[in-house]
Amino acid sequence: MKSIKELYRIGTGPSSSHTMGPRKAAEMFLARHQDAARFKVTLYGSLAATGKGHMTDVAIIDTLKLTAPVEIVWQPKVFLPFHPNGMTFASFNEAGKLTENWTVYSIGGGALAENNDSPSIESPEVYAMSSMTKILEWCEQTGRSYWEYVRECEDTDIWDYLNEVWKTMKEAIHRGLEEEGVLPGPLNLRRKASTYYIRATGYKHSLQSRGLVFAYALAVSEENASGGKIVTAPTCGSCGVMPAVLYHLHKSREFSDTRILRALATAGLVGNIVKANASISGAEVGCQGEVGVACAMASAAANQLFGGSPSQIEYAAEMGLEHHLGMTCDPVCGLVQIPCIERNAYAAARALDANIYSSFTDGMHRVSFDKVVQVMKQTGRDLPSLYKETSEGGLAKDYQQM
Image (cartoon, rainbow, N blue to C red; front, top):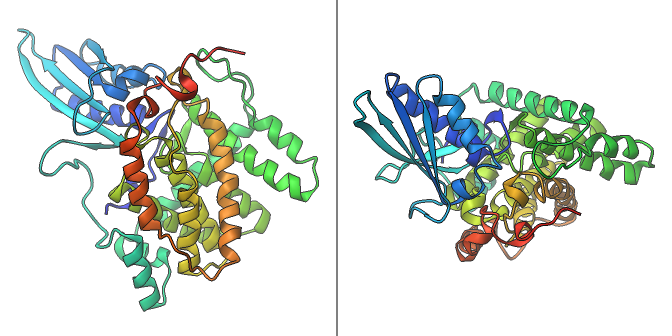
């Protein structure tokens, strides 16, 4: 598996696969063609179907236009075999001759891949083990926890990086709680985070706690929807879950920053396992791969903070993902707003519930996390494309403003 730095990417929304990935691909292509006379970029499948709502064209054009004019071609009905989020960059010289034709895929969480013998075009593998079962065995044999396995495999600067991740998450919450008004796009969806926060503070502790979790998740998700700076955890569309859970526990239970960073490490390991063995791309497996994985990550992080054993942490993560199996990705108008923002708030609450449920057990259960990951991958394959980030089915179909 790759470094968890590849999972936690600091950038701007609204979509890791449809905005961050294409922008990165455009930057890489531009570096090879500084003298191009014009560019042509063809977007396929899900990238084309919801690209306008996700500002895919804006991300690409803004990157390339200072060098040469850019033409965007939309092919929503054409799905390349390697991944639904395919795009082809073409550069031409002054004589109109094609100088390069490069097909690349945005495979989720801002990561890119090519369809060849070595499909990954980014960082090297750093983890020898890529299954929860094997890592859990390592924990039991060595008496260590998941975050210590991260420390074993990553470079020493991982803690500095996770500290920047944590700082960015907190800043997104703070900005989101202060902002008001309407989110970009035709839905005219009002921001709710500040209202939830104000109302939550007026309730007694039991209701206040849940209301604050909702407010924190809404704050980050609304920042993402407006193109603000966030952290993929594991994606932009699910970026509100982890910050909400960690910030709530940091504030309410006074967990130290050191313990929060260790929880981030464990959660990153959970997300990495899914990314390596299945997918975190809504265009490939639906929202179970985004919000479902975010819930699993947050469940594991919370359980570790409360002193859970490796088996209990694995169980919490398993429940977080299992109970999102089959969740479709059906963004209304191709925007990362409805139902995405509310799903982040609910998943954050579910993560805290998964932590509590697992804490009442000894960690023993019948269905392993690895099994749920396999099922999620197969379920994603079985889902028709209209339920995988194309805005052709589910809630997105025939949507009418109330």
